Image 1: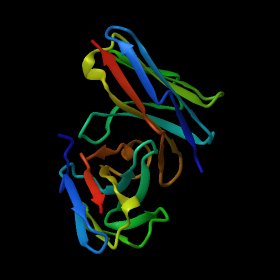
Image 2: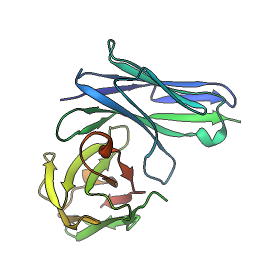
Image 3: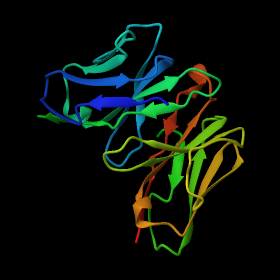
Length: 113
Length: 115
């Protein structure tokens, strides 16, 4: 089955700096890569996603890049703010009749004011 | 609010108790999921229902018993749990199972402690 590795497990940045979280996946059949943000006391919320026919996608301060050859994808947050502090999960989904989503282990991001 | 509501938010139970977790979605979705979230581990998919039929049972012990009476409601019945079952149990829903319909929306979870 699919295996998703996520690094780093914790990340501290100064407010205004950029943060980058990296994930690798094992199954070349994966074609959908969502990113979730989980704030304290809440469930994960989808913040951005990318499909395998696209190399990069941006949404305001958040961007995701995908390298299909190397089987890795990354989340980039620019101009970080204290409200960006949360746990971020990457995930990969294998194409097929039922697209099971496999999650990474999460990255706890702390933005220091 | 995500449109997925889980109750209770917190639950403490003994190993001999029987309890149930409830999930309700107000998004008109056709698929619902149960996940287990433990510290420093990836989200573990437990069960998937599509149009009230179970499509995935991810090697979950029989002490966890799901029920999906309709596409808006999902239950997880618990009995004779073990302390290692203590975790955050998350419910999610999606429009469907395939392609762009598989974007999942999560509830806030039930924090379960087994004593």
